[in-house]
Length: 449
Image (cartoon, rainbow, N blue to C red):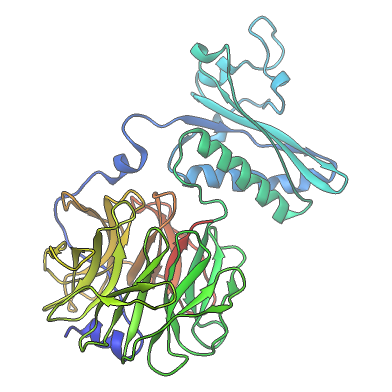
């Protein structure tokens, strides 16, 4: 039995990451695809009347959203002309010397393939935003407008943030971005209220709210594919058992727990109709599957070592990852009936926290070369070739990685600034952003809208 498994059964599980050097895969190319990125110039929007003071919030949010999407080459505003368009009529025809033509944005010093511009106004106490996206390249001059949108929000900073998110989301979708982050939520465990409860927040860290009030240890959530339910491990009734709550109001939903010293690490199947979990009902913790209410359960794994953390491939429900021994814990895969077991990690150190990318081909996980090394780090692996890349380096303990719906971002736990907090980053390890500040926050999972 490994040290981490002892922690899991005893109380607070410590789920970790890795420090290993080996054959790397070009994750950047995998994220963005081959070829160059669209080079986008995002002008500073202006507003009339009461809308103008909100444009600073809007402009910074819009730029940040597009930049963090990893889809674009963001052109520096220092190279922009002094006069920026607000409306399409501000872009002159070639034979009109008033204003600037699209070709002026395509050429130096801007060198943009696309330009986002627009304006806002306060209308009857509501913030109204008009946003445009144009193609600047001469070969597309006959139909340069790619997007026009009208967005509304409250006449305050929250409203400005909302319309910026919505406009950015439409631009990302226009360029074939994967599933949107807009409206997605992150669920996690936090002790800020005095006990470890399950909390929820928006994808960007806003609107952090407690979902449960069990006044006990509630950890390791898993969210249903449609985002309507969250399953988690709780000690509210003594021994660790699985509970399920509605993500809308926190109301507890029925789930039958087997008689066991341990029922833990629940995760939903891609169709949302079943839950895989680990239970010690048969002795050592093994992988089971049951209906959404816990009924009809059956044992899947038959290992001579503890098996926990089942994760079903989102593209192939017959492939299940899990964490097990013998010896230091590693990541394994098996089919849905428990056969064809294969170790995924190479046996060095300890590995856990597997998380499937929505593409069903890549995983994020936590890995370490041994306790003497101390640090845990986040890795991404191509499940077919077993090539991997290390995303975090010598910045405390970095663990519990979980994929965003867009398949390009990860949320994870890190102690880089002291106590465990939640962070997001791109799948190449860049653009790290801290989401939580208060209390200790761990075990994040990223749910759909």
